[in-house]
Length: 489
Ligand code: SIN
Image (cartoon, rainbow, N blue to C red; front, side, top):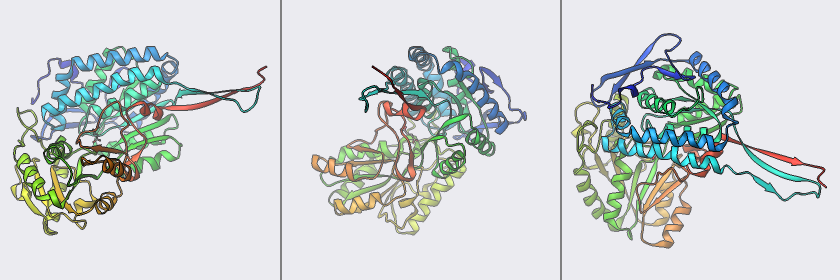
């Protein structure tokens, strides 16, 4: 076993529906693999559409009571769950590293980040205010109230096995919805452990239902969720292709769809930037989770006056990163999630080299054993390379040289995506000008890390619709109801 849990009861190998541990109806199971060693570390039920319908029915039954509980009661449940998650933080971090591969220090950070959504929405539940509108006629009184949308579903990715679940579930439960959660096939163990902790905190049966599946059966689960008239909202984090397919399938039942999809973040360093700080920001924005985050910097644009200095310092900083299994101390870059991910990154680097990129460190010629890709910096990047338009999802930093602000804005916005962007500048006028001109949902100025439970996370263009986190995250799980009271004297 690559991990040892203090509390072994967190290692749950059955799905959890209506407060009960369940096998798949077909009886089949699917293995969970440690990406660092390719060894099997567990297995979970391989569920499909039929199992999904069972989970949806449980959520529907539980909704009748949960939606009528007061915000105070829901808040108490979420606070209790937050305490359990915080108390089990180390065990959860071990599970995250075991099935997703990220360094233990990052997994610990992820648990804290994940827990912060429970705390935030425990409080926001109590602030789901409506409105009183000045009436248009003397005998009328107009009110707007917020109501839970109903049964909601979350389909979550492997790159943040805890945070992407709690970001959705905490908001849904706070709003008064019940939920079916389908974690990524690669990382179900963290999801199930979170659910065990929810049950321990007294969440009523059926309010949360976690179903598991394989890569193949996930499609059937997705379709069953999308086609169900009972499910009124879906929140999905993952690839743009999968998001588009889910949205198309969900259209038939006119659901609320919240999609957090692919990114192609620009990271711009202007001549007037603090270069040392920009290098630190670049490390954070690029190498978190081995470059496997939707908000990872994908394209570095560096102005000609500071280009060579930035590349030199950045390359020296990248040389300090330590690649290896996430469970080993001091490792800062873990493996890629699977062989397919590794081959994709290798292909993107090979294409860049064939199109004229220069390697300052790393590169596929230094490829290491297994799924470990060496942290790589490429210079002379150009728009013809695949990395200019595709999400790399690996520890590869391509640097493009630019001359003017106008030119870089055009380059940065020349993408179908619009999730996050970063830039470094010490000119306050430029800070506002560029932040407003960049086409994306989130901008980091003089920082490489912008995620927090208190702010809205989401994208524009093909990076998605809807927002998670902050006060805005509740909207995805609520309906507005307008009430018009007439005949008032
Ligand atoms: C993601 O990459 O999808 C999420 C990253 C974050 O929440 O910071």
